[in-house]
Image 1 (cartoon, helix red, strand yellow):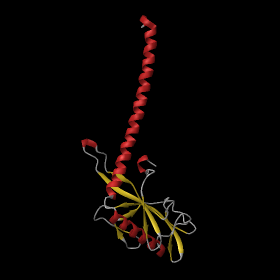
Image 2 (cartoon, one colour; image 1 turned 120 degrees about the vertical axis):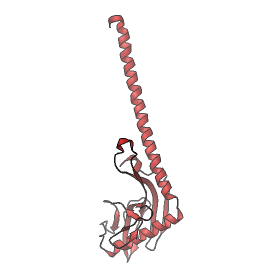
Image 3 (cartoon, one colour; image 1 turned 45 degrees about the vertical axis):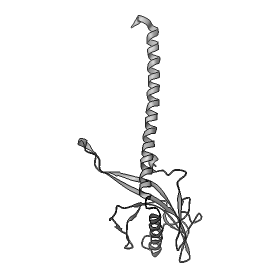
Image 4 (tube, one colour; image 1 turned 120 degrees about the horizontal axis):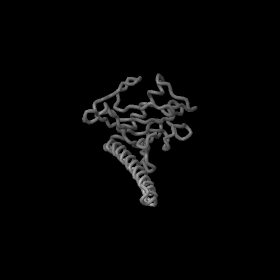
Length: 195
């Protein structure tokens, strides 16, 4: 995981009650996608993709024993990273929903049933879980219309901090090299006129 993908320890978690149970949302740092190489002095085209994480538990573990929603008497866990598509862009999913939210592929999370197995995309449960997600995400967006700017700010701050850390390491490395060069110069000076 890259440093700029992490979420700070004090990240605010928002709670939403749905028909099936509680869902928790927190803002993640946006994803930065670049196109091309920027050769010939041209700027590299960028796309900023604001993201949130949504889960059935406030620890975002997607384990039924930590939190769940109930559908037709069965427990399900949700754990997704979701990004907001640009205005006017939508994706048609397996259940015919055209939504402005895109679920990032997840191996360990996603939709899980009561025994921890992934919920098959072709099932009614999958579509119902997706609707619960949309309901909470849309309410979150209504409550926090500036969340996308916050997601982008988190990305910019973490990229800035990453570069500052690299600069600090480079300064420390340069200071060490200067000390070693000075030590060699002192040894040269001890030789006197033998050069």
